[in-house]
Image (cartoon, rainbow, N blue to C red; front, side, top):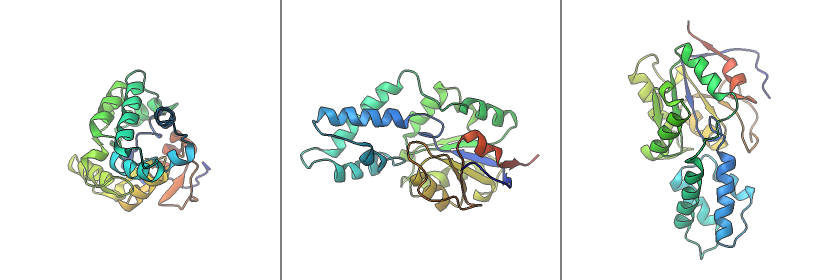
Length: 229
């Protein structure tokens, strides 16, 4: 899955957050299950996987199709998020090797940004607590754009911010890193090349170079990039 023969020209990188930089999807699933338990219903991974990569609003819409009619999906989601945030208030689980990769990119002055379905304020707080926020020129949350992933809005906003800060001229200069199919669709719709690092769910579609590649780790995916000297 991580074989790539040619390097990809790149001037900047835009990262997803949950499931890519953070090892948070497992925690999200666990709190989804415990929330369902409180309501006396069984919740499996198949239903949870339908919400991976979605923001709060889209997630509630999916929940409405999953939960019994007697349960208010918005209230369920709020209770689930509260549990999840409480767990994240302690040690934040970062994917193995991520800090080293980001630090090496920062040492070489590679412009980086984060485009996430999570709320922007939450993303900035977590990235600050794990020591990565200072390396990101822009952090954009799903609540800060009109439409969530798989719409391209959060990526388009991130590209615009990077252009305003100098160093790139548009999407052609950037590569996005994503874990979920929803995120891949958003990045591609924004005109980005994307390298997918599947997390809990395997990639649904095969690699389609040069616009969509699949790697087994972020370090391997970054190794495929060629940066301007």
